[in-house]
Length: 322
Image 1 (cartoon, rainbow, N blue to C red):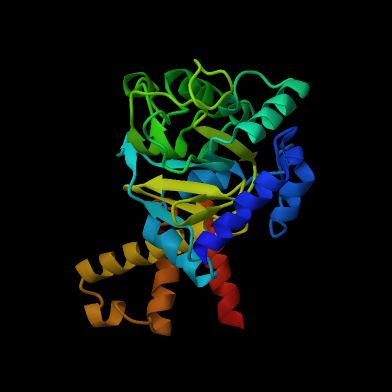
Image 2 (image 1 turned 90 degrees about the vertical axis):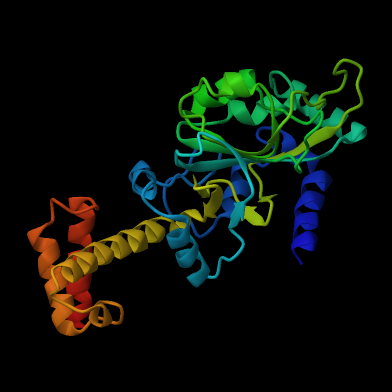
């Protein structure tokens, strides 16, 4: 079923190259594909999850995000097996997507002609880079192409970093590793390194076209994961999870609630106020009341912002009245 779904995405992209004009998929199509997002959007139609949520997302673990998404019915959002730059750092941002297929000369002619007509500069690999906004993550399915595959080296990497201040999730190989490592927050999750470079433009050194970019800002696949433009990307500890924008705040809140409960529980266990059997099960009303009071007493000392702690206290009080 996954293969059929992916084939459908590619069939749509290949069958509708006319949409490859100003961003391949126009604003209306991006909005149409992401109807559950009710907040602000970029000019290209992508959901714009607030910066404050992105800031809080940096403390979320992959397990916490996965649990929230799975409960909500999203089980195809995680992918690992990456080669990473700066593996100890955390990548968080909003996805801008692109999709490639093996080189197809006739379609490539159409796409390059569209690019010329609409004033695009350089080869197709540069077009999505020119669309990036601050805190975006460039997410590209280059079908794992390695030899003669890298479309991102230190020049394109510098352009990505200049526009987004962020990194990439790239299902393909990169080149110029030493140059990319000079960018301190170019947190990259890629499939491989290879010193070669791709031939994705007609006339590239007389070499055979080996890949064609068929979509920008459309649904794509990264390994086992489905990605839509505007998804929140969380990359850490060797894995990447793609969070639908309408669930980003809930992922953050669930993570913070777990963190608060764990901090409280561990402290009370060290104090020997409760036993492990009392903490490692559904809490009694007495323990819940102690937990709420503990949050109030320590509101400025907790591993969660004051505003988020107060929001949780209010939510628990509201729930208790029902």
